[in-house]
Image (tube, rainbow, N blue to C red):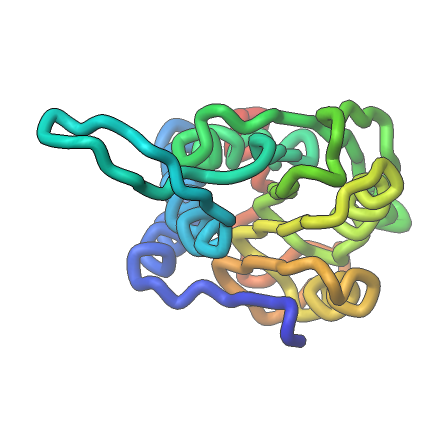
Length: 209
């Protein structure tokens, strides 16, 4: 699947291992999510366009590159995706932030949307969708469907941990969208949780379990 980019940086691997540990507390887990997001975001944003701009240094006038175009949009899938927003804003402080809310039906494991608020002029922006876990792929597929429906064309998705099933489902539905994955795990279990995984990312980020 040519649209999927797997992270191979040793720092990302190390920090994800720390996230997996059952004894990692909420504060440390939240910090690790942000740190991994920064490292992944550095790679995901490597092809952003620049233009030349004349500036004044303390020594002389010079022409140097700056980012070109409208500010990117960061769109977390609520609620776990919120944990990655801080890391992205470290890299892109002026980015716009949208939100897509979905919850998973515990019986059939299908996503159900309940909220969507996106920045204007999506067709002119780079849109980065964040969700720590890509399990069945349903939530991410539906989120990208909605972004495309509202005009988004240049879309990237970032997931810290993914299942093979989720990657396959997403790539088949959205082969034109780049998907950045921190770790490809073994499989989904009967309850559609990623194995070995790290549990419920939302609960661990917000301390709700």
